Length: 331
Length: 230
Image (cartoon, rainbow over all chains, first blue to last red; front, side, top):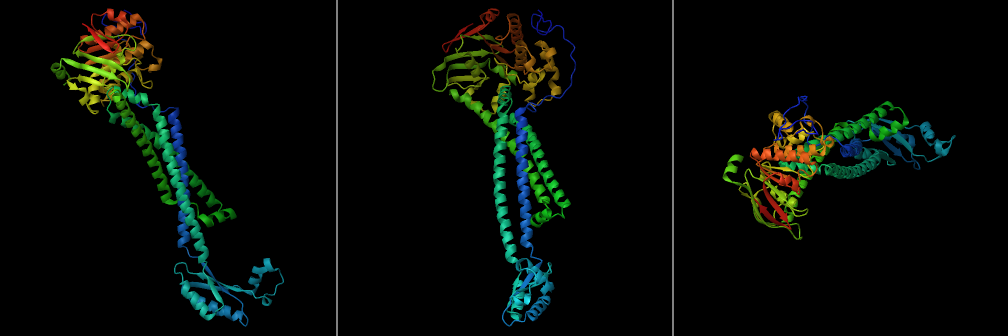
């Protein structure tokens, strides 16, 4: 009898009489879980985008946190002594005496009196030119430069100055720094909350996208189950496949985020002299996210890869136990 | 080990007063009792909706009976654990009505799948798979994927996949449902040949013409009851 479909001749027992010489194609076996389809590509995109956003958030938070810690530890390099005019006070003598005290205090590198001319210039925008400073009760200032390595004890310094010149007050800019630090801490707290939300959103979207991608694979799980594959084997195939998929997407997102950091840091380094960059640098340093930032990006990438694999594993396990429970549906 | 089991248990599968119902519905199968002896050949027939597929699913352990006792290779079905199930399934070959071939794998890979899931190296079974594919007339279609195969070719690929592990029992659900009579006869000869080589065969079909070609035991289901004509 001749087989019309293949042209092979068969004996009565159905055994092929003429065996056609086959091209001995040696190729690797296709993976049991199909490599890529539209859903798979969508999953990679979702993972990449979510990882990118998470890493950006992480980078921004780490930037603000580093800056805040710098602010916190940093004591203003300068402090100001202000002497208020008072009836009968010899301003020049008071200035001399206060600056003398300051200069002799440990931790102070210099004390400079803002002279009349400079004070006039300072007030010019408000009071106009041609001002005779002696006619007005204008407070005078002494700029004190601080040795950053050995900062002075501000409370003692204040005491020492006030004991010599009761009209003097010392402003160590602490209030200002404190406000900045509070602001930075608030920003970090908000950033952390945003990062937590971002990570939660990433986890959820990765879980749902993975489950979506798995939904098209139900028939594969079923066939493997019916040809006698053990649950462990089936779960391993999917886990491996989705680990690779997840890592691909996460790595793309992570690399994208790192590129953004590098570009911004390069930009801020190049535009160091411009006022805009000055402003940004004053607030955020040099935009470097530091090793911990890059470490965090790597950690997010690995976690997301593992999350994808774990989700696919759980989906397979759930699917298999669903098949099992369908068996006992009847019972 | 499989051979030893066959010798000890002359009946590969035995049903005793088996009943099956889905959910709270009426019983699909009622007091079904029969056995599948080793090396036997039988047709399972009956009108559409008589419960053929349900009975096959019970035979293939993809359903549990509502009542009654099923013994598979000497083991009580209700005592078979989830871990043991894959090992027992490997001794039962199934040809599904809808073939259930994986479209992204070639014919060769589909047929090799049962061996692959056992973790065997490809070099250890390549020859066997190629030989079987030639035997079912798919020698030239080895490296194409199922979507380009004809209905008959898919059918033969599904049969080859069921046979590759040399199961002790082969269950086929309407194996000739999608093919023309000459090809149906050829597939039937394939099953007879398998049976001659030692495999017990159960063919579910409502094709009377097919059944008339072989003098074999007939199990007729009607209204959930089973009648056997030896």
